[in-house]
Length: 175
Image (cartoon, rainbow, N blue to C red):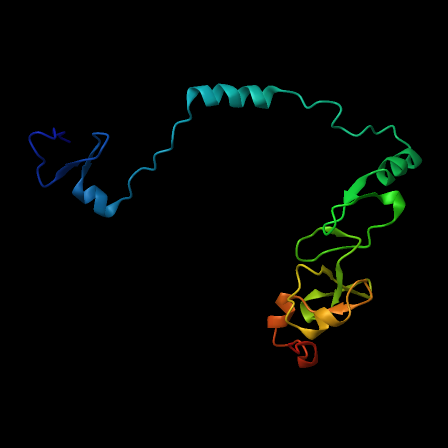
């Protein structure tokens, strides 16, 4: 193969790429070009090796010698934040009631209820479960989402189930 310079110009059978690699036009038509892998910066490569070689700190690993009672005590002392009022509660206080199916935040207040739609109904070991939602994640243009809210026993309708044609029209009444 011949190489060319940009000053002289190329013949019909030979062309240049940006990195002065020469390809035949017939080669371009019949076979694909080789895939070029990007080079890693040498400084980043050195830092990557340092990060990989660092051992994990022992404080991150849970001690296997804990008894089940000690583990339960540590677990119950864990503090969680309510997604609506930002109050923190430990699991021991038993204040948190549900998690929202839209924003996945823990809730102790601002609960819209459990969705009555078909997409939020789950059957686990023969028992029906419905997904809970907060007042910020349900549409506020539907009567069922405004009339009776505030506890897990209430009913609501999420946005996904509102758009589903298999949801009953009695739940889709608008204001």
